[in-house]
Picture 1 (tube, rainbow, N blue to C red):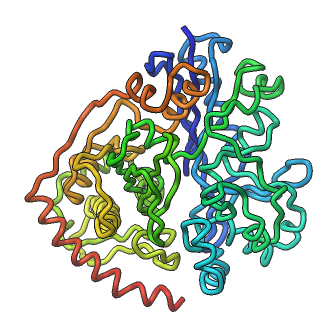
Picture 2: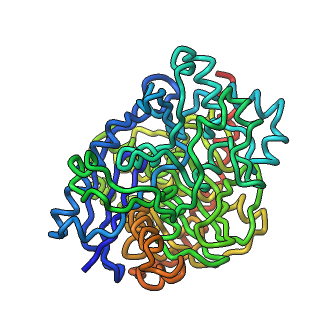
Amino acid sequence: MKYLLGIDFGGGASKATLIDTDGNIIAENTVEYPTLYPQNGACEQDPRDWINALCENCKAVISKGSIDNSDILAVAIDSATHTSLVCDKDFKPLRNAMHWTDTRSRKQADVLRDSLGDEIFKKTFHKPDTIWTLPQLIYLRENEAETFNKIRYIFFEKDYIRYFLTGVFCTDYIEAEGSMLFDLNKMQWDEELCKLAYITVDMLPKVVNPTDTIGNITAAAAEATGLKAGTPVICGTTDTVMEVFASGAVKKGDVTVKLATAGRICVITDKPYPDRHLVNYSHIADGLWYPGTATKSCAASYRWYRDTFGGEYKELDMGAAELPIGCDGLIFHPYLNGELTPYADPMLCGSFTGVRATHTKAHFTRAVLEGVAYSLLDSKLYLDSLNIPYNTVATAIGGGTKGKLWRQMIADTLGLALKTTESSDSSFGSAMLAGIAVGIFKDAEDAVKKCVKQTDIIYPNSENTEKYRKVFETYKKIHDALAPIYNER
């Protein structure tokens, strides 16, 4: 038997999934690592944590699967989109990576939007915001000049990890689309956009296809990871498109609801839908796109709550399940790092409102879960206003789908049926992608047909939908009242 290995690097953990050539999951392993918040608005990760997680995960799945490393046909890696890492002339990191949720570049994004917003939008399909690499690089130049002047190479997260494995400096076109340095009309790095960031095109990686074999495991990487030297390494791509792919969404009209570090509702289309409040990326399936909304702190809100106030997810869910919809007046807004759809406002802050002496920890837990659901509803209603057609049954993806309580809550709030699959993890998608690259699967649809297995479906309760919508009206009023205050700071 031969195997395919996919490895994902998300906002708080790396997961590896080993599958056989029939699409069966043989072994999985997860390693958590911290996201760092060294100052207000900052959101960083230490690249050494990525490499440590990579090595541990590779060794673990080989051991758990009881396989010979020589039977792994190929490896593919994905990661959170446009999390950038600047390196010197020797490819050594100059600082921690700036996560895409870092909001310190607000001033730089505002200047770009006011002065060149329309021109940038025409090339990138997005308006300047703190999530993109372009304003983040300008922030570094203006605030960390000594570091900026030493930059020779600019990596994105998965590309740095893959460089550790192969010594090859490259990226894929979907990752490049998220940098705000790439012309989506010409599908190439744009010199004018690079000039805005005070960099040159040669500082950026060569752009290839996600399914391209870009190199092989080096002897040094083999020793560190337990993989066999010479094993082919696929370029890979970003985590969201791999989750979309892993869920089986490869046809026009398919829709996914992502409950991960960030939350997203994505629709598969045959064209992009440029809009300030949507994120547009190409799909790995030929000719398709997956424009979608974005909620910045989805599962990240629940993890923050767990880490800050204590408890285990299962225990927390049990308490929340006993309470009524609306949490007896307690409402949470999940704006821990600002918010994207439909506000594009990095200054928004998270909040609990309506707190009473009668509220318990369980109330706060349920409020967090409901608050994320309302944020996703905010996104869905904006998506609906654009008249993009999609199916009435969505596939739920991401780590947050493990909690049945939250899945039912999301289904009820959105008014959408949510199905789940055996694995919608992006690492599973990357393993499937590796299979396409080495010819095990003919194309994306063939890979889905052979690998994706539906496990469950949850239908919305119409009575609950009506109750959630009433609370959502209050949720919106609170946002409207507090937003001006946050933007005064």
